[in-house]
Amino acid sequence: MGSFFDRVVGRKRSADSAKERLQLVLVHDRTDLTPAELDALKDDLLKAISRHVEIDPDAVQIGVERDGREQRLVADIPLRSVARRRTG
Amino acid sequence: MSAQVITVTSGKGGVGKTTTVANLAIALAADGRKVVCIDGDIGLRNLDVVMGLENRIVYDIVDVIEGRCRLRQAMIRDKHFQELYLIPAAQTRDKNAVSPSDMTRVCDELRPDHDFIIIDSPAGIERGFRNAIAAADRVLVITNPEVSAVRDADRVVGILEAEEKYAPALILNRLNPTMVKNHDMLSAEDVLDLLAIKLIGIVPEDEGVIVGSNRGTPVALEPKSRAGEAFRHIAKRLQGQDVPFMDLDKQSGLWDRIQRMAGRK
Picture 1: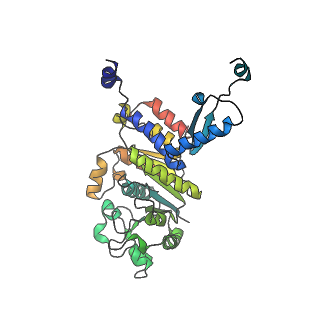
Picture 2: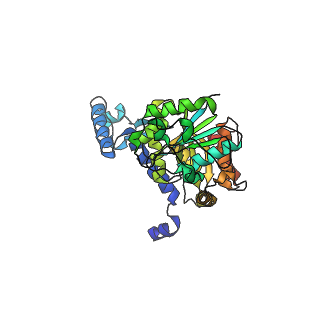
Picture 3: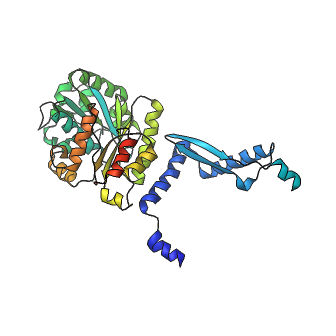
């Protein structure tokens, strides 16, 4: 029922789809980085960090953000606390 | 006097480059400026018909470059303004007949006697585009509020910014305020947020533009046309005047924000 309602009333307006799709496309055009390459980069990054500190891979967020005409790779990597590691 | 060379380009075809060149040239000439436009689309000549000058062509830019005529002989005087000229593209040659240094040489010869040289770039980002921007002091990037046009504009802006000398500015052409209001068209704010370059004008969709090109009388000559008014405003901005952006749909909140984004408030 919800999905029917969504489709008729709450469906995303086409301008919003256009903007969201363009945001992703422009990041890839500007960086020459495909989604698959970005995933590989994330995996390598996590492996490297895990060699030094303990992290929760599921809580990691890595993505490309736009800042004006510049792109930056932004990573939010929560570290597991030492205390929790000891008790756990 | 040394003319400012302005190249109008877009990446994608069909977004309104030629119309924009014709209208800006007319509007600048109406303000008393000495203007030459150059059709840089070798092999796909079009600026002549949009300006209504197609029957007056004897020589073209390739004739000038290859020495078959003097520059002055290839300059066609406009029907409406004494100080507005067109240098047409060759129709039977391709873009390899012109090089970036040929373009620079032609512009340098024109600079002392004019205020503005406006170059109509072909679509794409290859040889013809390189020719068109070779002599540019500034580049106007035209886009429409539409995914493919915005994407191509971004590519062009990226190329221009890498060379750090063209001061690119954006013209958002064919904005339909009603569709924007219904969230079925990217707004000017959306496009500016995506492309992140300076805005120099927003031109509303206007049937008068096609009527004008049908007649070979650019819409900038029509006092009541909204698109014509937008082009006249851009021409003023090119002359260094600070003209506020038009209120296209009488929703001042949105337009106030756009003007702030564009640094005009």
